[in-house]
Length: 217
Image (cartoon, rainbow, N blue to C red; front, top):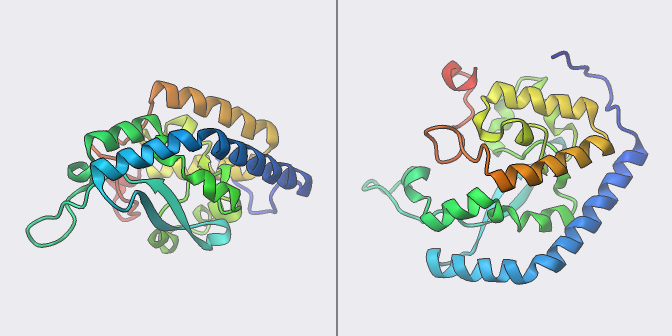
């Protein structure tokens, strides 16, 4: 794919409409889903203890950090040396259910309401990845990150990092309201069918390391 480094093609009107839809849908979603989220919070508290929410700093628009919110899916099991055990070992049965159904991501609606996330955009990754991106890959932060995105409906964690970044940049260069609505509709199907939840042989997705060509390409 060829990507332009010119200004984003979407207009101020699109960005305003997108933010309005984000605010309205996230607000209504939180209102409607509050009973379900309360039950899930109680279930997490019983099965995993406190805290109920997983909070982690992620890069947002222009790489500015924010605290992403999710329901916890892992316990705090540690290895003999004191380090946290691998994700696959700490991911509980209930946690797998939350991830398989994407219910663990419901608290992210709070991030959307606050304007830190959009419903649609490149998924926010880890802060330490910022220094690993090429100049072109860093353009994924030219738009708000999202709960779902173009990469998520085209393979999610079954994709290589290179494929994910290509899809993220395609979205940055072609963002539109019509595309956002299409992505939301496809996301609903992906969640129902539980496709691409994790990378093969991984609990989630392997770490992004541009020096590791087997993982990257």
